[in-house]
Image (cartoon, rainbow, N blue to C red; front, side):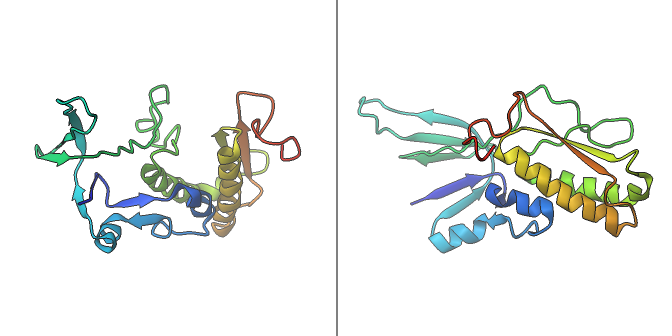
Length: 195
């Protein structure tokens, strides 16, 4: 039998993130309902976090299985284990939760579920303050990353945030998107014609 252990019941499809950011997709459009998926596939979903893994290979044949330890204390036996740890930024980011005016200094894209919430909060704050920004004193958004993902995110944000400012009665051109990258070339790993 197949078992999915997950600490979330809805997981985002990252390929649709630019469409969410630009406003073409909703939160539910880009998220997969894991319980529904498990029901359809005929396997079990356990809504918990895995906090440990043991492996037994007493006979040395590489097929000993083991147990996944859940946060709730329950051990789940397995014969074959596949682990998807996801990705999220490590240390080094500014403290984006406790700034003077309660606005994040940085909004990491990963984990995407947290990004979606913070991005919606950013749009709400921008909606409330849209008339403050001018071409001479624009709203500035810095996107870090000169690869395809960073460029997609910058263009999607530009499209959506201009609309937020315009719809709130502000000047849609009172926004500046800065794309920062460590090299001198955008899309460094791509063909020169794409760059």
